[in-house]
Image 1 (cartoon, rainbow, N blue to C red):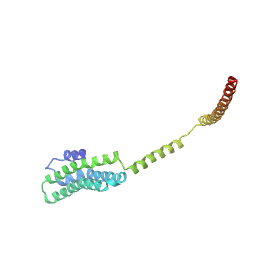
Image 2 (cartoon, helix red, strand yellow):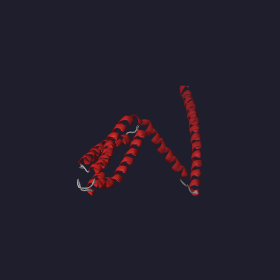
Image 3 (cartoon, rainbow, N blue to C red):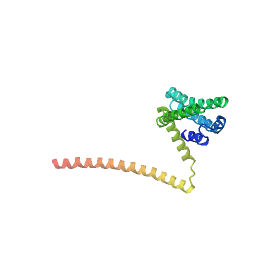
Image 4 (cartoon, one colour):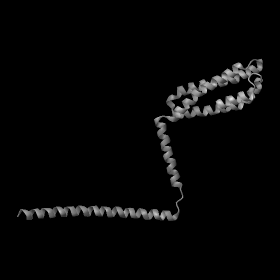
Length: 185
């Protein structure tokens, strides 16, 4: 917003340029600001719907001076009056833009819990889709299959070993019982 205001003021002499020139020079900037701020507003509604009243209020406080700036330029053009009022609206819009920007940053930084969870799940889904689309050469695929079979074999051997250890412990317990019987005699 500041850059656009500086461009408007830098491209036209302060009060000597006709309002029609200032209006023509600023029209594209104003339309871009309005479109961008409407997109940001709509995204804020999505990210934090519970803040809709404050989003509407801050958006209105930001857009109203911009609309007044354009209207005052049109009126100045017809009445051949001073541009001071128009520039006051521009200054007010610039001041209000900070509130709008700060609100947008706040909403982006802390979206609603449910929206944040949906975004997180979307990221996970996108990552899974990407991984499933990755091309795996045949040699790597074969190695992965071999590795998978070896892991299964390892699990089987580990279970067998565990069972053997249990049997060995039982055998040791029986031996200890037998030894204790002989020691008692």
